[in-house]
Length: 264
Image (cartoon, rainbow, N blue to C red; front, side, top):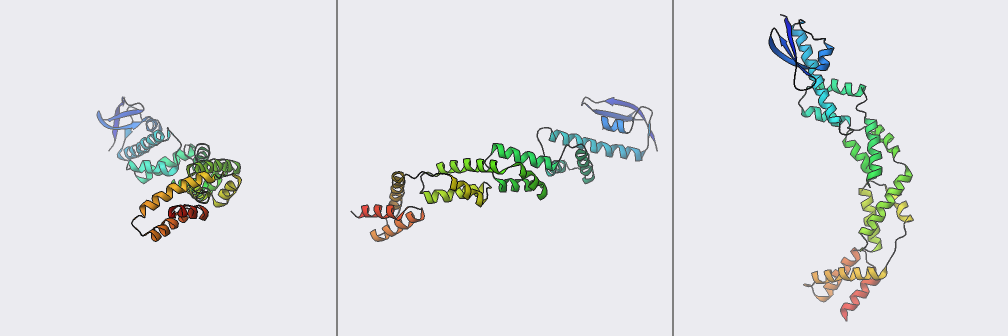
């Protein structure tokens, strides 16, 4: 059974049109669907054609939502797919939309990964390992990640890693040098820098040692430990305090010096 288009009316919403069949409202379509099917007054439409029109309009609406999602920033393919799935669209509709976006170069995981690496390099203190992990979470392929990481040259890695190391050294300045270096190394590894590069960076940084400052810091720590261990007998109190200070990285010379002062 066929019906005839008796009226095509423009909606208040731009780009949408109401289709009337046999003087009754039937459905609405986007402008692209209107053009694709050359819908016009007096055109006859059967049930099969109507299904095709509505299916194409589903794709058009989903495509429009995808464009809105992409309007604000670059997105990985996985992000767009997730967004479309949240709209509870059929998989075939999502597949068509994604194919259309790819053909128009509106999504490109290599471009996304390249841009992500450049942005992180210029605006953050994260190293390659964290970058790789973050891109994997976006379901970017390993080969694409490898290619993108070439946007982060060795000289930039060295520069950013050095800035991070110097920042962390200042942050942990109240620790003994040995412990300070351990904490800086750990922080840099968490940020995504590899061990060999960290070693290279730390070897090139001159770390100023201030025995007087370290002595004062150790005394402050020792006093806290001494107070904490006050419930123990004097000998046990000394042993526990010494053990804790050794664990914090303070030198045997300073520890013994402080312990001797407690015996006076």
